[in-house]
Image 1 (tube, rainbow, N blue to C red):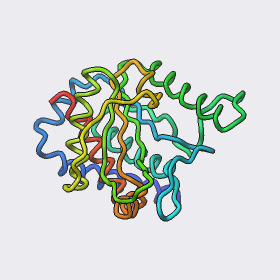
Image 2 (spheres, rainbow, N blue to C red; image 1 turned 120 degrees about the horizontal axis):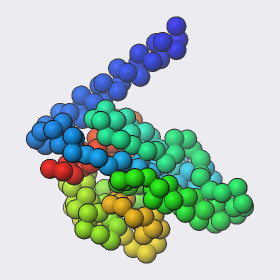
Image 3 (cartoon, rainbow, N blue to C red; image 1 turned 60 degrees about the vertical axis):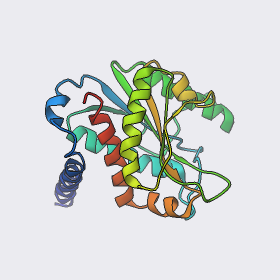
Amino acid sequence: MRRGFAGFMAVMILLAVGAAAWFMLRGTEDVFLRLEAHRYTVVIDAGHGGADGGATALNGMLESGINLEIAKKTDLLMRFYGIKTVMVRTEDVSIHDGSAVTLSEMKRSDLSNRAKLVNATPDAVLVSIHQNSFTQSQYFGAQVFYADDDASKALAEIMQARMLSLDRENTRKTQAASADLYLLQNVSCPAVLVECGFLSNPKDSANLVTAPYQTKAAMAITAGVLAINS
């Protein structure tokens, strides 16, 4: 009985989130018609994981956990709209090789394996989910980075426009990936990295640790992907 109720609640939550996303996407015409042309598979990468927790929110929550929650919600929404997805990780783990011992080795191996997974996925589009952080707390807002190709840049522009809906005061622009963004530099498909906000900023940090705001971020990411063929 408990399993049945849990399954029922999961379906109801999915439908509620999907309905919310639909209202957010109403300005995007013929969503379902355009989905017929979507033959890609979105690889959803929740950044960090395991021993590599990434940045830390002001309440102590690790970036890796926030990334994973947004990634899971994004996966549910995209599958609701019929988009094929692959999740890089579904738990708080690193995907490094067993031969990696030090944290540095684990990070390098983890990133290499993520890139291999993306490159092995036919017709892939990579969406890597992260959170930003800085030594000064006044900086805020989502920002999308892109791999060095026209398709990635176009996707980033679309994605950034959707992410701005999270905070109308955000004036950040898309930016080409720097050399230290290993994943975007080592995949052979359209790829973006979404920094959903600054964990070092009180307002962003307070928002990003909550399920409703994580859902909003997932909705914005999904809306960006749905608009690829618009």
